[in-house]
Length: 274
Image 1 (tube, rainbow, N blue to C red):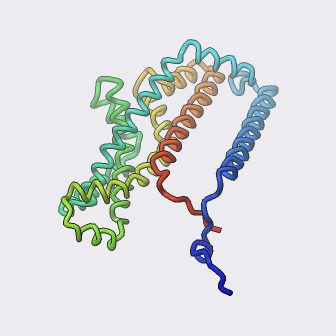
Image 2 (image 1 turned 90 degrees about the vertical axis):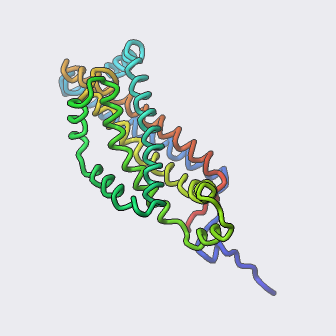
Image 3 (image 1 turned 45 degrees about the vertical axis):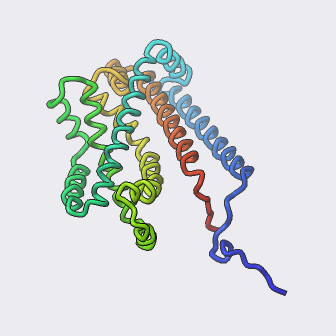
């Protein structure tokens, strides 16, 4: 009597979890998030009982401030979101192209890589100060700051993705004598898409924070600039209100990226390690 051994089981792997298990994970994470939010709100309210309003306002005051922002200053929220999305989209395309050039053009690889690595060593504050000196327009300033900070992330990750290509797979493809465009379209592009999405998921929260920071330092519109104005007016509920809305924007954009990743990579089987 023979016993069939599943290769995945023998390798210590498990098949993808069923849809019901995925929903249970979502419910568990949602419940944990609600509990943490409730604890934070309780801590803020308790602190407001013993602290002046310019140190820690009550939850009610903060909620009223958020409603006021949504009713009167929503244009600043839209401005920040558009700046963030446009800069990330531009950085994704430009950084990915730079990474592809580094990966497939051998003579240019060391020079472009050195330039990208040097750019990653420049502090974000320096880029902000450069933008203030170099650009008169506010939109150009924010766009420049975000682009020079985000592009190296995509360039280096896409470059690493190309270097991770299987040598055996490349040799198999080359036996069919494809053109360079066919190699890129059929081999390189499908391989680097997960790296591009992974990079976007990793940096989107950082990009949102840098957008607010750039607005605070270099412009007078957007969520970061309004946070700075609230700080100048000693309006602590305004600072907290804008912070909460920035967190919501950040989580919303991350959810969109996660949805896009799931749709674009639905062909890839998911395997869990026991």
